[in-house]
Amino acid sequence: MGAASPSMPAIDVAFERIDEVARLATLLADQVLNAQLLRRPVPDDHIRSLCEAGLLLKEYGVELPSLLEQILPVAEAEESRSPAGSGPATADNDTGQPSQPFRQASG
Image 1: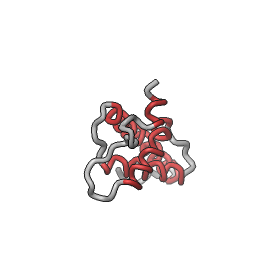
Image 2 (image 1 turned 90 degrees about the vertical axis):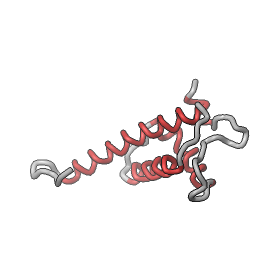
Image 3 (image 1 turned 90 degrees about the horizontal axis):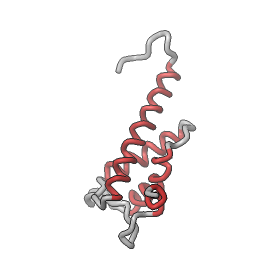
Image 4 (image 1 turned 180 degrees about the vertical axis):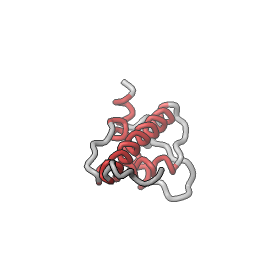
């Protein structure tokens, strides 16, 4: 993408990009949730990306998309628990059952 056109203030471009971050974070959160429900591993990069996106959105005062809001506490806990380079992470708790946000989302 190039620089903002003269008719489009820089602040509008920044918020368009933040909206795109929110959209992409929602898609990634959906993928992570689906992987969790199917008991598939979730790559560490996905967990880190969700955490970073959540922090960025909060920094800009943007309300977190509902899927990201549900999965972010699990992702943050997983990121703090998983040492770097230890392989794929899952959002399961110690019982092997889906974590609370996932149970709420599944109905």
